[in-house]
Amino acid sequence: MPMLSRVKNADSTYRGALETALNHALTHLTSLDQSSVATTAGCLSLRDQIARPLEKQGVSAEQVIRELAHDVAGGLLGSAGGRFFAWVIGGSLPAALAADWLTSAWDQNAVLAATAPAAALVEEIAGAWLKDVLGLPADASFSFVTGCQMAHATCLAAARHALLAQRGWNVEEQGLFGAPPIRVLTSIARHAAFERAVRLVGLGRSQIVYLSADDRDFLRADSLQDALAAEPTSPAIVLLQAGDINIGAFDDFPALIPIARRYRAWVHVDGAFGLWAAASPRYQHLVRGVELANSWATDGHKLLNVPFDCGYAFVSDTKAHSGSMAQQASYLTQNGDARDPMDWTPEWSRRARGFPTYAALRQLGREGVTALVGRVCAHAHALATRIGSLPGAQLLWEPVFNQGLVRFLDPQRGASDTDHDRHTDQVIAAVNGTGEAFFSGTTWHGRRAMRISVCNWQTSKEDVERSVNVVAEVLRESKPDSVSAKAKGRISEKTRP
Ligand SMILES: *Cc1c(COP(=O)(O)O)cnc(C)c1O
Image 1 (cartoon, protein in one colour):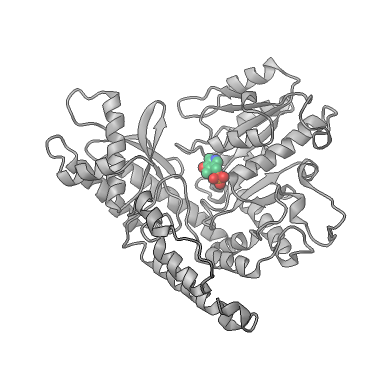
Image 2 (cartoon, protein in one colour):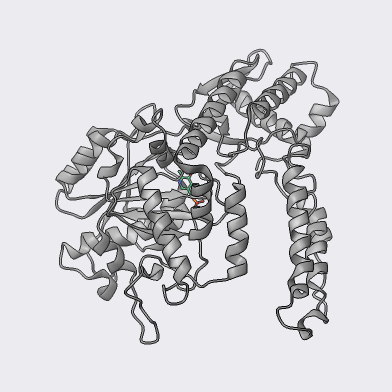
């Protein structure tokens, strides 16, 4: 390990490793179009490939990076590219990616304005831009966290603070033991990340009351009204959805939020990707009235195409937000001239995650964000409707935003629903096995379906074309009596993700 003992911070200390990383990054990103979207190595062989004993003596930084890139070959999902449609995962805009690298190079601890003044200010500015683009109240407080789940946890902590303070209970001082129980009202079509946030802030899963939704997965106003009226004075948090995970369902905010208000309930919105509808005149109607809520959680690493990890929490009651998070310690230097990020986040030391968001928003500009939202939604619509009209396919959900569902029908005569379920999973596995495109499966209203989620800035018309074609090819191969050995092999090799 000769480098470290040489001239400190000389160009040569870093150049080898950073240039090797740059070259590998460029190779990875520019070959996504030609390489398999699915991984090509299984975990067992990958482990053999990756596992090295930790040597007694270190090796050069450049060698570490070169060998790391070599060892992980075949184990990287092509989710940074344009034909990955599973699990609502975005890519990285070039400016966001580069700013993310700089974030590591600058290595600022964005805990206080004193420890990272530029980072604190960039976060301040990016936070204001986000509220503007998302149509949220300009005076709402915000925090940059690791993802939507932690944004939920942050908002729930603020909700807990406010609801209990109204009842004379200081939750930060007294904790939750003996506090009035807080009910959490939501519908069944909810992302599991919310449930974990409920657990993390100590509200307890059994406090969640699942209300009924209609056949489009909208929380029903009458069920919300009845649930609140059943315990009119007990504290309640109402979780509404701006874009649910399966079909991108948006709750009816103008109808539901006033009901919650009547009972002084706190309304929190899960808008991991759907909150971005606000940025597009074409899709804005989906989030009409959402600004009336008390808190909102969304992601930077999905639709905005910022690298992981990046989520945002927004809270209208800024006192409840800082009341739940702010921390004073004698050795901290709070700087009155700028916002201290740690007063708004659950973390202490933290990455300066404002930089990549700032960069993504600047690269896109307002019109770029609008165009991005429009593009992913148009591609999702084209994919779902075109795949859904292929022989052997059935469109279960035509996208209203960027999410669609398709089911594949078992062509055997007399096939049952269970057969269609199995067949759907087999077709998904076979498509993924080709490496041409990648989708995930889901269960929606009791039936298996292929979920089509478009979230990546790179997805193009050509990607849509290639993806429709590969599904068509797999369906042709899976006709009864004509299941080719190739397709069969693919199917049995792959398991559901
Ligand atoms: C992705 C997602 C989440 C979880 O967000 P993370 O960024 O993974 O923590 C929550 N809700 C919805 C609707 C999502 O799509």
